[in-house]
Structures are given as C-alpha cells and as structure tokens.
Image (cartoon, rainbow, N blue to C red; front, top):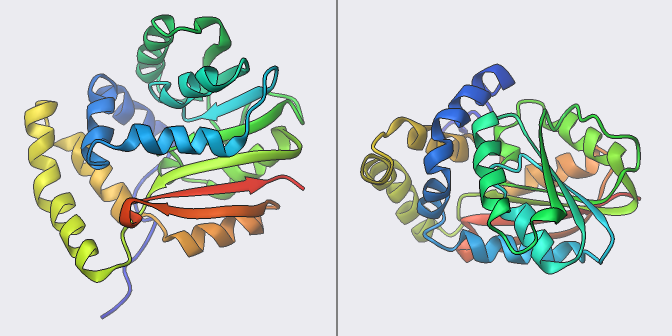
Amino acid sequence: MAPEKKNQMDKRPKVIRPLFNRMAATYDRGNRALSLLIDQIWRRRTVSALGIRDGQYILDIATGTADMAIEAARQADCRVAGIDLSEEMLRVARGKNAQSPFPGRCFFLQGDGTRTPFRDGSFNHAMISFGVRNVQDMDGLFRETLRILKPGGRFAILEFSLPEAPVIRQVYLFYFKRVLPLIGAVVAGRKEPYFYLRDSVLDFEPPRALEERIRRNGFRLILSRPFTFGICHLYVAEKP
C-alpha cells in the first residue's frame, strides 16, 4: 500500500482565518468531541510541563478560545499573551477571560504565530494546543518561537495524533470518519468545520516526524509523550 500523502491541505492564513471565524462559536464543543471529552486534562498537563513560575511571561500561540492561556494564569501569577489569526476566536477568548478568576493576567492580540511583533527573548515559555497542524509554515513557526524565547525557555506543543496500536487506531478512525461529522451536525448545526478538524488530523505528520522537525529548527526535545492511547501527543522542547 502506498504511504498517505501529508500536508496537502490549504492552510494559508487567508484560508484558515475565515474558517476559524466560522467555527469560533462551537470550537470548544468541537475539541471536546475530537478528544472524547478529556482535552481539558491534557491542557492542564501541558501547562504543568512548562513549570511556569510567578512573574514569568508566556506566549500562547493560536490561543483560540484561550483555554490554555487561562489555565496558565490559574497555575501561576504570570502574564500570558495570546495570539491568534481569527478575530472571532479572540472575541470568545476575551469573553472567557473576563469571566475567569484572573482576568488581568492575560491579554490577546490578532496576529500570525510565524511573524509576531515581539522582541527577541521576550518570553520565558511558549505553548500551542491543537494549532500546530493548522500552520502552513511549521518551520517558520518553530524558528519564530525560538527567536522570542529566552535561553532555556520551553515550548510545549499539544496536538492530536493517530494511535499506533492497530485495534485502537481502527476504532478511532471509524469514529473520526463516520461519527464525528454526525456529532458536528447535532452539536454545531453544521458538518463542514468538523470535516476540516477531522481531515487536518488525518493529514498531519506522525510524532516521530514532528520530533525531527523540532530538533531541525534549533530546539532540544526534552519530552515526547502520547496521551490516551495515542490520540493526542505532548512535545516539550527547550531553547539551548
């Protein structure tokens, strides 16, 4: 059997921005469906892996609806900058942050994670959850993140993956291909965003390839760990 082609989807910012604007109102429900309702546990573990301390500055790339930014603010008295292409995602993020216990710890701006407005070495740590697979220029993202981190700063990447165990993989693929679009029709009233969420996971490169990409772009990989039978994966990289 010929290997699957990867990274063939059109992920240019001008394509991704309106797509995520349309799905912003139901994005959280989409992530819960993709993760079988356990994505919040993964997020807490990802933020914990950064070892954030009081007074530090954190960049949350592709912040979406701000779940990771708010979790970081909950774990430490830090300052979190959330950046995202989608203005509608940011509108939801600001509303959630305003209702959080620590609204003053986070701020948000519209922008591209591959070209940020921040100075070299501005942040102690950076993170991205369920966003790296939506970036067309992943190498550019890693190079930019390396630039804005201080030496010794960590970059945590949380992303969906496909289980390696054959039986679990087949069950999950059936769920992805058959069940998930139906959930989208019920939960969000439309299937199209869920087709994108599904296809972007199926299209994404496997963990070993992403590990190599991380190293190739100047980071030291310090952790690579599957979650929940491999349906999600955490990578933690460090700037030398």
